[in-house]
Length: 318
Image (cartoon, rainbow, N blue to C red; front, side, top):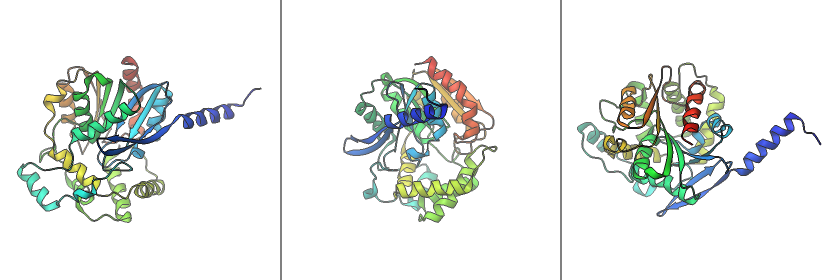
């Protein structure tokens, strides 16, 4: 019996869906939610999300690109966001006091460290019995993964580091203007659904590539969907404090011999381009891919541009 092309595609899609797996892993008392997209016979690649980003923030197109090229994407909600365990008992960071300490260069106290967050990813690999994997991380996820890879060098085949840096943000590298105001409002203001939607649209327009298109109606629905998926709006603030409480990771990244592809946009208003380039230069086995039109996000124009070199890099180190 012969099947039509449409039926074959449907069978493949259903097969891929059935191979996905989701669940929780306990990391020393902290519950972390993950999704293993599969298929299980493909090369695993762990994806580490950025500040306040739920695992649903990963573009569907990126997941598909990885699967179509023989990889097994595994994503998860960082602690204190999405369906992973929150840290509400620690309360919302005090805006004025932390603001003063940041500008005076004084140490900040966080509910957890970036190293703690890195251990969450390792716990997922242990749960899935994955001894060695590729890893892809963006923004804060890059900061988390720098510690993760430095502390567990034998667990990773290759490392794709996107829009991140080894420096702890300070007055010189902190975002400026409207983006800074929006982040401060997101971190320390009172959150409402309407406010979250409008702020998310404004942030997306700043962080997306100039040529990226946005369907505002669809985008609003996605923001509301994610808001309903998790009502933990304070995790963003605690994650931000964890970033600011960390120390520069220059020494750590210099010890990472794992083959690394660093990707950074020249237009990035959140993580300075020069800091991304410096991080690559410190890593002894790295390649640097500069993207002239990229801002901060992995939007469609960026993914179209980086897909071929990224897959080639992963294949070379599989």
